[in-house]
Image 1 (spheres, protein in one colour):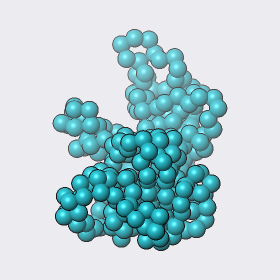
Image 2 (cartoon, rainbow, N blue to C red; image 1 turned 90 degrees about the vertical axis):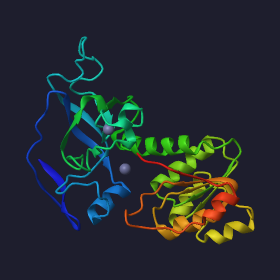
Image 3 (spheres, rainbow, N blue to C red; image 1 turned 135 degrees about the vertical axis):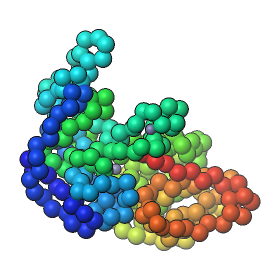
Image 4 (cartoon, rainbow, N blue to C red; image 1 turned 60 degrees about the vertical axis):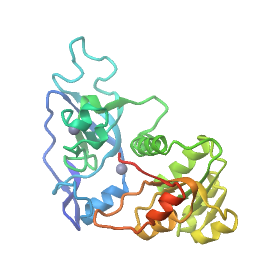
Length: 289
Ligand SMILES: [Zn+2]
Ligand SMILES: [Zn+2]
């Protein structure tokens, strides 16, 4: 079958790979749509140390079940009738070991034995992909594959908002108006934010943020202080760029919360003032998938 392959950092090509073979507990999916995540770019650039090469990337996807493994969905009772050949599904790409301390205490996303479809095992930039049956979620009729490919990233954004746990009426600042920043903007507004300012260097992205309800959009973060001299209750970095993260931290109000959402290269470093974190009672949060 055809697939996109990252042979090693810096080398991406489209070529042929062997058709996937189905394990008894897996589903074979014909890929309908797959999103390009910032993480894919980091994998292509060799900036994501968890990746294994060569790799077929692609972890934000949806498609149609074309084969059901012998034991898949079997459990101890009859086979789950909801998933069969032809069922349209979205897929959770993270593969947890189930036996480390974190898996056993309900923090599977912090699993010590991290693996993921499209990062450590073949992903969905291919005609077909195999997935554990337990990771497939049936799609409602009205969602297209393209829309459903956004379920994975928006799930990450929802998890981030749960961790941030804002109060109703909080003023937000989101730095970075890429796909994730724009999702966080919409979640913040629906979650009761009084206003959401958005910063990005790209004015086209800011236009989109404005359309989605951003109260203020700026290319220069310092301009925001004219309207919000005390800063923002909740500040989220959605860039993963070290200087942007440092700039965002400066905009956190006393008693406010700061979330590092963007994925920075692993060796990147930032400089934050511990005195400010102490003196201004700033909560620093972060999220993983
Ligand atoms: Zn992603
Ligand atoms: Zn684990």
